[in-house]
Image (cartoon, rainbow, N blue to C red; front, side, top):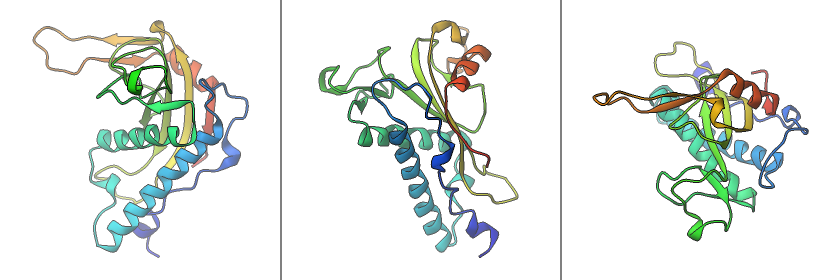
Length: 206
């Protein structure tokens, strides 16, 4: 098996790397998160092995890095409710946050609320961003994978999962001038990142 083909199969999620003492809201459990991560590993492996059999590049090697990160986060957010009966995917288009308590809002849809969990995926250990500084449970899935232009193939791997209830002062806001077209963003501060990492859910050595 050549190196490129080996890279088509992601690193498995290791149950031993979960933190049984972490704090999770809304009756969410470690098992729900683990199953969702394993679903993504299976999904990515199926896609990449099929692409490889057709002589095509792995998906993470041709998508823009941010686009692939978005796929990881969206997939996880769509799978957690499959296993966690108390959470649903927010049905409001671009609603915030991604996951909300089941039955709390009409049709399980709300444009904006502080209730629920915002889910993100990132290749980075900090510098996580959102659109507004706000009090919300944030859950970040840290992963490693190739990006377009990488010379050495390597398999996808979940490196960590971190989560905490952030306050407004855990964000630094970067606005924009009246003439700027740059997307408005807010970044988790050093203290906010520390708060999340102290409540780590998963840590791997890959």
